[in-house]
Image (cartoon, rainbow, N blue to C red):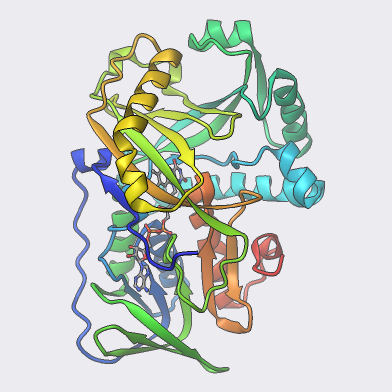
Length: 403
Ligand SMILES: Cc1cc2nc3c(=O)[nH]c(=O)nc-3n(C[C@H](O)[C@H](O)[C@H](O)COP(=O)(O)OP(=O)(O)OC[C@H]3O[C@@H](n4cnc5c(N)ncnc54)[C@H](O)[C@@H]3O)c2cc1C
């Protein structure tokens, strides 16, 4: 399990859009706060904003700088639909826990939507339906059972036959599940909006500043940084994405490689409702549109971590994604204007691990996001800020290290 990674390469599509620069100071002396957050991507941003809202003083640091990790590479299909189908997750962790995980994920989307509205963050956020296409993981009858399981959990879903899928969306597959209320957004704008909201409430940001060692006791934590200054805090939250500090056990968490492309803007060629598309396959392909009509397509995941090998494969993976996109939507110009790759954390169940690190109650960590990283960052900000404030979260055990 590597502890440091070259998280991404190539040019993600978000470089085509402006997002406000987030200022950060140099860390030149020892500092102190209620909570230290290590990592300033989407997870750190959500956490900072949640903790500031609870009235804590917060310091955030990043060894690269704000928004320089995986968050800049995400394709940002913000879905409540967990990578692991409810029927499969039920077999892994039991029906009650699986239904609760799906419900919490659904709730997280509602809360995120409210948060964006309340803070008036302009991140090109749009509600999108999603189509989960039959594939090698679930065929038409598997999807039928999945719809029944979701409905039993109180989560709306419609089964589309081949004819309905073709008639409604022009897609040729054996069947699909139609869901509503997922979000498509610009992840850099969302992250910088959340960080700026925390800054307005007097959060302090330092970068580049790398956390190297941690000492903790009953009263708090002391963190050493590479350049020397110490940071003391009552709690420390590790939102370091797919890079882990030594204190964090890498339980059931693995790093895989993934690729994505984006086309030129072509709003007239888009399919009905610009629905998000993903497949009940392993690995799966996924597709979304940006607000100006570019088409993003990602997938082709491979079970290895080696970044050089990942980068060398980008031309081949770009061709493959382009061809697969063209097969689903022959009307599109599938030429890739942007192509990029990234490392990606995953767990066997598809659920993240969120909570205090075993034997270190004042050190909280979030890891193993899978394809629902942004949804899980929202859940993590709720669970961890609740734990620090002494609020009991009914779902905390679902995601805990010891689950
Ligand atoms: C190609 C791709 C497509 C994806 N698509 C989707 C999608 O469609 N939907 C979705 O929900 N998720 C998706 N994801 C996952 C999603 O991008 C991640 O879950 C999310 O960006 C993780 O955010 P983060 O803030 O936790 O990590 P990051 O953005 O990586 O931030 C962590 C930060 O911690 C810093 N750091 C690390 N160690 C230290 C240290 N010791 N000291 C100081 N700072 C440190 C790093 O420099 C980094 O900036 C995708 C990921 C990739 C790569």
